[in-house]
Length: 289
Image 1 (tube, one colour):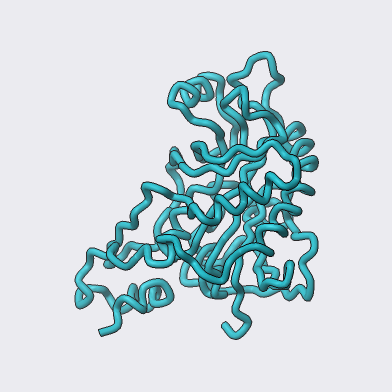
Image 2: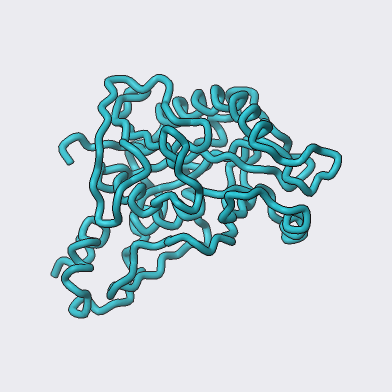
């Protein structure tokens, strides 16, 4: 693409536009994996070229398990994005993580069963290292930036991702607490896996909307509660994003940029031509003779 974009922003529930984005240009992208969630909004934010995409679409008509995560991440890669900052709504599984807090998770537990989480299939096998699933440099920058706004922010923690769209039962919520999980959401983990396969740095800012239903003295989790708390958090979240964007370095010193270097198992000669063509954007530099 001629209009190379440096940074991607994925908006979660409630975040469908990016305040402060200038010279906005909507663009529709085609990918080998189908259509992304919506148009990408290309523009300038704090002097940096960024692309914004709402994962649920601007009308919020895509359920968490219906999101085409592969198309979304591939589209960012096609635009030239090297870093993705996600925003996601979560419920808390700990007393000390309160509604309206922000968590910068550094671990994920994937309990989804209905989603495709890899670009690699149909004749090309790759196994990325995912022990540390979040870019540490980007996560640290988000954490430090959030602290500038007086918000209660937690560095690190495990986000458990479920299919949804229903909220948890009390039995499930209590089991997750026994497992040592910190927060519960319905997105993010597929984005993290696919971003790593695409050699894009990824970190997410989790906005705590409620205590999950384990906390019986609280009202049951409802869409009304989630939306009310999201509205309170979104203004600060956008301020944090703008600060992060302004401070991102041009250089990457993390492992994300070379995640595929030793990940591919398939003999180059055995890769089907159609698969090679489909994944050229991701693996082309490693397949050149």
